[in-house]
Length: 392
Image (cartoon, rainbow, N blue to C red; front, side):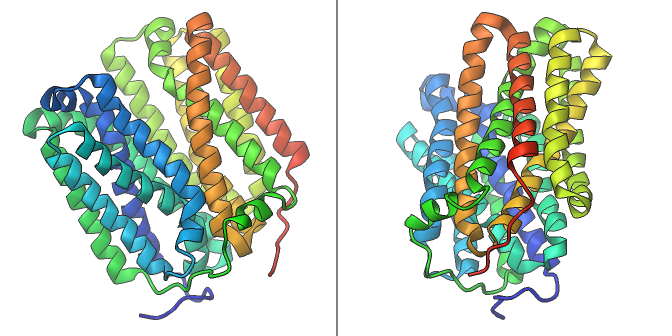
């Protein structure tokens, strides 16, 4: 197997194999959301306890994102990535066969390691698989796996869970993981590790020009988005006042627009990354304030929510691309910091949204979310300059 230390011809088959891995990981992450009731009933636990499977995965992913680069600094990156797919398979099998909550949580912890580790190394790996000018397009391909998983996991998990049982759904997820592992084994080249990386490297990277403020801006965008997304159903129920079919249609429109946004990102970033970083959160902020002020007309709300989905589809691709250009020599460490910032933002955004929801309802959540996103756009406009390439 050829060792890829320098970019040569684009390895698009390897990028596609990573997209399959993303689909498998994110699908497994979201499946419990649509299967909580049968899982809780079968295991003799409350739905709240079953919901801790999602919390465990997110918490472990956050810790892993900060530690994985240093922990595997002497291991071929091909082997590390294959290891994440093996963990994905084992996780789904453990969940499918779990007789009790502890074993179920162990399976979800393994998934958290795979998730946090994969996202930490994704941007750095792409930099080694394709030339620099193709990085945005490759990242948009990988993040399309997230969009597809978001669209598929919840409705398909719920549908098949009713027909074949929740355990069989996780067995199918394990099969998807096996497919991803097989394609990755066949296509991923050898990639030498960065033996110089230590835990202190995280601090050194964070102290570089623009890195800290860039991480803050990214965290604000994700916090604003997930405050919005967590409470979109109550908004549709109480403000837009649509029935279940209308709600499903609007959410499907959001998912499809988000999928389109990931591909739009590749084209936009190749032309002007800074423009994309500023305009997309600003657009989301305006839409959030618009929904809060004039929401209530189903067609208009559906269009604004779809536009939000398309704008957000560009965000993960944009910030991963920013990372590869701002910290090209320590992309793995920077990737860990970005993943940790995003995970913290998701948790804090959802938590703060809950507090606001209790006092101001879904309209209040959308208004504050829009305000935070506009602040993020201003922070990027005035605080995040053109990437500075650092060569070691």
